Length: 92
Image (cartoon, rainbow, N blue to C red; front, side, top):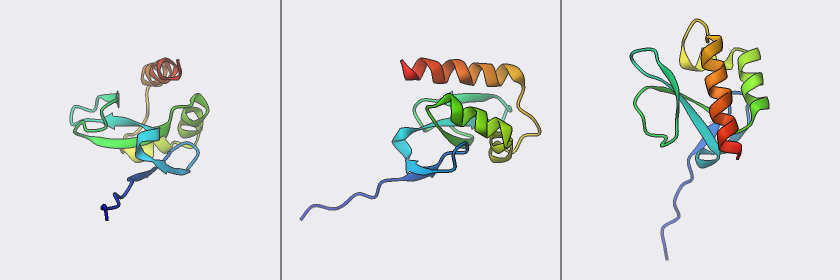
């Protein structure tokens, strides 16, 4: 009999639903306080997971989920726009 592999689950910071890690996008804050999308899921830094959906990003910003999870005081508008752009590219 083959070994059953455990599927890692993560919670989306927007909709608060637990999903398979591969379905979510990881947003990372590194030691230099740079915030970016981690496409590999393996970059060093504090990570937050979000669905590949602009609505979840809006919810995460509205309820300050991104700030709480990444442990930063505020998310600048340029970072939000960059995340929206990257999420839009992934939808295509």
